[in-house]
Figure 1: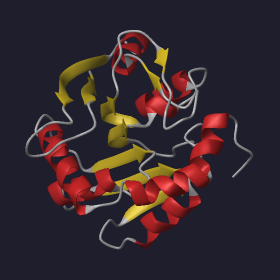
Figure 2 (figure 1 turned 30 degrees about the horizontal axis):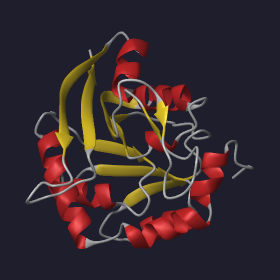
Figure 3 (figure 1 turned 120 degrees about the vertical axis):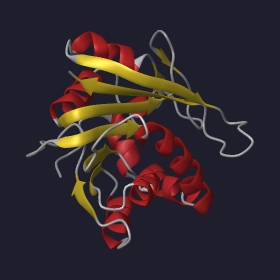
Figure 4 (figure 1 turned 180 degrees about the horizontal axis):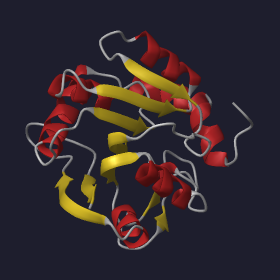
Length: 208
């Protein structure tokens, strides 16, 4: 992989990305994600292939494998330790592309492309590139599950500046691609009594 294009890429490829693995790997995470994705998948039809941009060690992919056992899973992961763990997790059976999202060039399309907690960490100058990737790699559905804000804003992230950016990612994509239509959206609350999540709002869109 070539030298990282942005500070944010280097941040996640290095020690901070390594530490993220241990903070976010648990059976509870998988259970919470399964509840979220059960809701999302219920609004789709015929999803047989999925690619996630920035999966880390696959907490979302585990949920999808449980919900759609025969799904063809792929992932683009910048952190080498996380990518290796994905490869070694036989129960996931995922095709791993170890590279930056900003460098990845898909050779096929997928029924569903998605990010979850990843667009918020992309340099704002490069976010359109990721929108284009999500759109171009999708055969039908695009999902973004991120922190929402009506206008772009940067906020401190675990003591670091310029590492977390909130905005209306789905709105950007709907404006950018005229044949993309909103199917459903929902806020997932950290105080949910059964399956708490990280105050994420998901938006499911479809090519029409």
